[in-house]
Image (cartoon, rainbow, N blue to C red; front, side, top):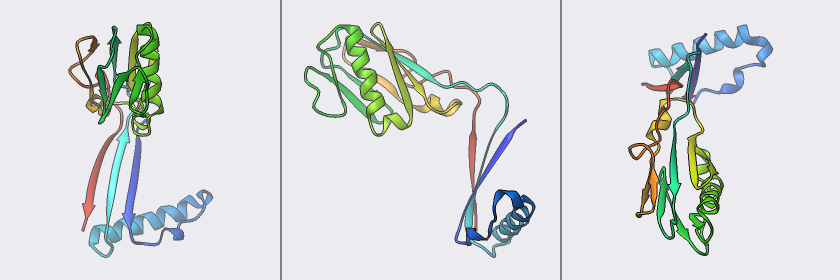
Length: 174
């Protein structure tokens, strides 16, 4: 079975829709709303997205830390810097072992206001695994890179392996 989600942005008053128990009445109101948009009587945007029951997989990537000192890791648009004394949300402590440094980097990624909305990081034995929060190929577009000579990332600069998932297609109506 597939799922279709429709989002409508319009100036039309949405309070005319009723409680979920009155789904037949809501269906008629929705038909009227979409008809008004399609003929130009109303202005707005319609966004349609869907997913199937086919297997979906989240994209992921790894960072292997080896005495990373002041190296940097970029996740999405945010760059995290190794430092002995973290003073910013984009710093992670690198004074310990590779395992401790990896745990500090994962914690910084998960605590950051932007990256925590897109990915989740875990660590084990000096390796940080970064996984997209959303299932599907969209995660394959999240940047994961490093600078410095002591860290290595898997993939080609992006998370990889995301399969299936939701595909959004915005349609603008007059």
